[in-house]
Image (cartoon, rainbow over all chains, first blue to last red; front, side, top):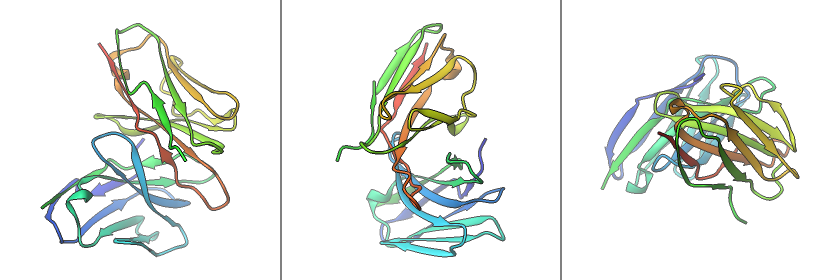
Length: 111
Length: 115
């Protein structure tokens, strides 16, 4: 079953602009992770934020977590054409090791 | 070092046949996961291994699906009597499962088409 819900489901922007993707989830989590997928194949881990953290940065990525609203956002600054991909949020919950993924969001960065 | 590898990359099979999908995790990673991705269902967890044991099989959709892991390394996902609804990309991931390390490293997937 899906836990997260990304919003918007598709986003098209120009190179150099910022892209913001939102994720909402339903139950308490241990951590929330963002993954990128190119061409419908393997996923690449981008960033992880723990349930007791509120914000995290990695290069051009900034992720925030609001556990009271059960939501997270991923900001990609100064986007590049190479950022074109599908992005998924995923959570781990309780004592479980499995990732529960959202439906994903397709980002298109136009050169 | 090398990443997670999966074979075959593509598999076309006839309905009713059995298939085996293989995953080679990153060396030293004790945790191994299988997921599948389909248009209708998105990304779904199937099974998790810690070493050779599978403490969580809750995502296996039916008893036609089974998986094993040997030597704490290679894993095989077997689907018996395949059905058209089994068509999907099957993704394997591994993790070192060190304290505080929870990210998973994914392979390129096996695209299964059941005709």
